[in-house]
Image 1 (cartoon, rainbow, N blue to C red):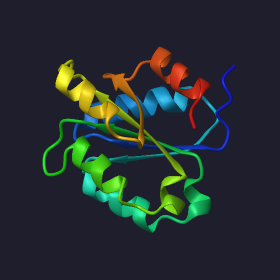
Image 2: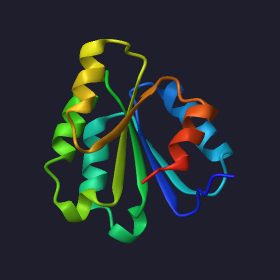
Image 3: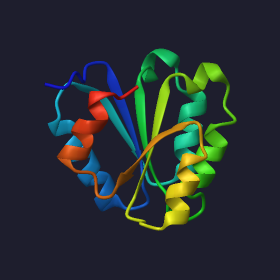
Image 4: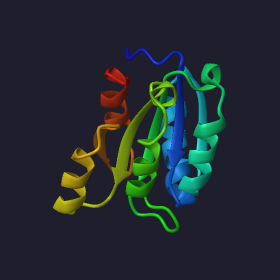
Length: 134
């Protein structure tokens, strides 16, 4: 069984349905401390900037690429400007239905992004993520 204790999740996706699916799969994995969903990437950035470190230790962030106002790439670029003290509490995953090679290559250029995950999130992709989350 995958160890999931002391993990927090942030899901950032402009689709309420995709947030719901991701939350349900994450909750069903068991042992997760918290899940927060944001429909806007700017709101997630504000949360990260103001969160208390003890509330977000070991947080996995899943961010969709294609969103209005601030897309996933813009989110990652803004995230990378945070101090190391903030960034150390988070592991970023880009989640998207895009199979565009340019998107896949661009994701690899960000040091903060651990991996690209195909959308929608599945039990199998979450299990793989949880085997080495941080």
